[in-house]
Length: 188
Image (cartoon, rainbow, N blue to C red; front, side, top):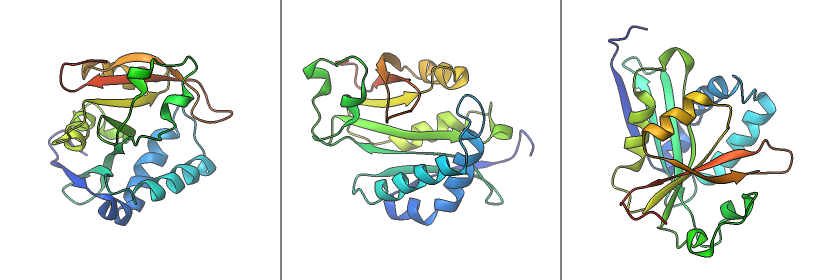
């Protein structure tokens, strides 16, 4: 790998992302094996099961970064939160009703974003983020991030995210920071 190597970022719909599952799994497994995540093969398998279900959503969006020879180096994906989303129920302190209101268009849920270690520091995560959100009609983006992931926290803040609370996404999970990005200057 050289700093000059050309990286392309491709936008994926659900079926295309499902076809690229192996590439996304490779990126995810490598990135999230590191501290503070320390995910093992069982954790990765659980994420991939959720991913398979998520790619079937009509509104799913993904982005995949590859080298000129096709090696996957980064990925991101998510979808708008529906009216019955459980995301807000995971917060450790309840959010105000006006913040929790979802209609399937208001909030884009950024489920995962990752770049393999040797490719970090080249702006790839930012390009993935931009590609994923390009053309979205959402007012805001919501994500969970590990509080000990200093690099991710710094990137999200640089992109305009702010912490709005903490969540435990499932029983036994670490408490994560919930961050929101206002896309249209009308923060709720």
